[in-house]
Amino acid sequence: MAQAMAVTKPVRRAAEAVDGLSEFSTQELYREILNRLGEDATRDGLLATPGRVEKSMAFLTKGYDQNPTQILRGAMFDVDYDEMVIVKDIEMFSLCEHHMLPFFGKVHVAYIPNGKVIGLSKIPRLVEVFARRLQVQERMTRQIADAIQEAIEPQGVGVVIEARHLCMMMRGIEKQNSSTVTSAMVGCFRQKETRTEFLSLVRQPGTGTL
Ligand SMILES: [Zn+2]
Image 1 (tube, rainbow, N blue to C red):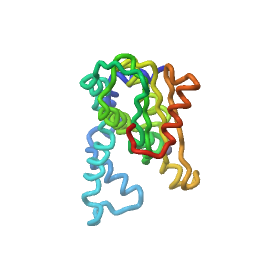
Image 2 (cartoon, rainbow, N blue to C red):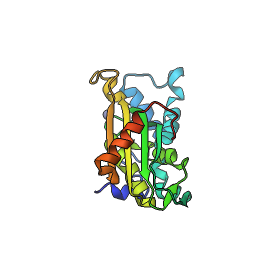
Image 3 (cartoon, rainbow, N blue to C red):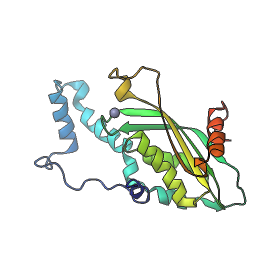
């Protein structure tokens, strides 16, 4: 799949600006957007807004500069353990690439090792790398699974994401409380028994990390 590329290499920012806009700073562009929304960008409350938006967008998309493979490489350990490792209820905040509005929810990750495990704290960091980009929930689910598969070649990986999308909720397209669930199953997680075990562990109310 084309997305597999994004796993090993950080996504590069576009080198070329839209024609004729390259001489404007990011803050000038946000100021122009405020004007076009019908606002007075020079009023007190909005004066510092372009600067704030620039900073906050840089933070919300910092995952472009982070390399998931590198994060995992520093924390892989040889083990003699072949039961399911599951980290659930990882908080996730991202931006949808269609509307640049937030979607947020929980990520559940599991794998069955094949001689190697990943330090548990690295899994939320991995989620963060992919979430801090403009995203599509389905793609992010797959990217997390592929990154783990590539790093430690386990017997299998399962990733489930449950999220709510403001682009749907705020615009009235979706009922306020409905959430979107996506999953990616690799290797032995494609087998019914393993998948069922994973999903039932995810559904168990509990402590987060088992
Ligand atoms: Zn959207």
